[in-house]
Structures are given as C-alpha cells and as structure tokens.
Image 1 (cartoon, rainbow, N blue to C red):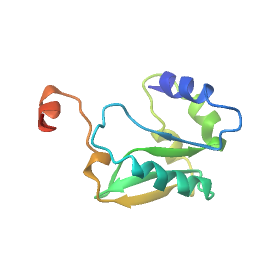
Image 2: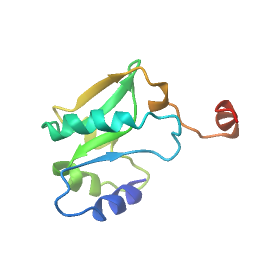
Image 3: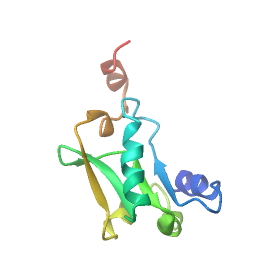
Length: 114
C-alpha cells in the first residue's frame, strides 16, 4: 500500500498543492466528496476526510506539506498513521455509505447488484 501511495505522489507535478486519494475497491463512493475534502485542504487544513456515521471514509485529501510523511511509510501501511499524527485534520460529515463501503469479497460484489 505504501509503495502505491509513494509512486502516485512522485508522479505529480512539483507545484501540486493537494491530492485526493481514492481506493479502487470503493465503486459506490460519491466523487463529489473529493471536492468537499479538497476544499478544506486548499483552505488550509493539512488533510481532510469524510466521516459517515462516525466511521472515517474516502477519499482522503492531503496537503503537499504531508507528502514527505506519506512517502516515508513502509510496507502494507496506508496514510492513516500520518493522519493520526496531525492536528487540524478536518472530518467532513457525510451520509454517503459509499464512502465507507468497500468490495473485498464476491459477496460484497453481488451486493452491488447487476
């Protein structure tokens, strides 16, 4: 997981101010959430993420100031540790269950329907 994050960040233009990270196994996620979390980061927050019924979700937006911390992650580690160590991270309330529901099994996939 950390290798994918690092690779993605290193491919961005040098003047990138923020990034929204989506997970590929969350097909029901409302893409409009990216605008909401990025607005918070562009407005000065170090990071922002949606929260649905108290559960942290995706996409997560990060300021470029946090890119070096994300790039220092190792192994099967996501950026949650980076979020935990930051003050000023914004939780954006949402009622979108797609922001927290991922597809890990065939049962999960069938749940989506045709």
